[in-house]
Image (cartoon, rainbow, N blue to C red; front, side, top):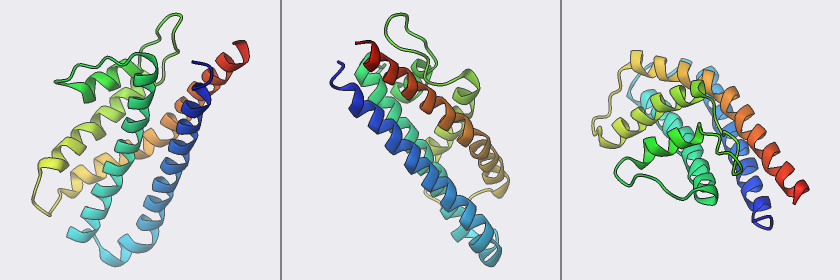
Length: 161
């Protein structure tokens, strides 16, 4: 286990970098492109893709953490089961990865991603996109802090063993 922890720590670091990049792209898009394009189909598609990519990056990291420590998810509802398990502190195994508040925010993005995957129209409701952007902007610093804290927990395990 100790030999595999550096790989998991690096996955967390990589995800942090990806999330920083996605968030930076969003800020740049909102400042430079959105004023030119306006709130139209094209800008809605860009925003929805950013939200989907951010959530998928986080979920992929959580899946790697789950596989490393537990590797048991309900196959019928594994996406929500995965989020639920990330809020658990498993005595003698691992610390909690995310807070209940972060779970709540991620659940909003998870529902949107599911909707987006099965929504074949090209127009999005901008009130919903605004709400989801607000969720994402509140989520970003929280999730980065929490995955960094979890990485610190993993580094302590390496030092102990």
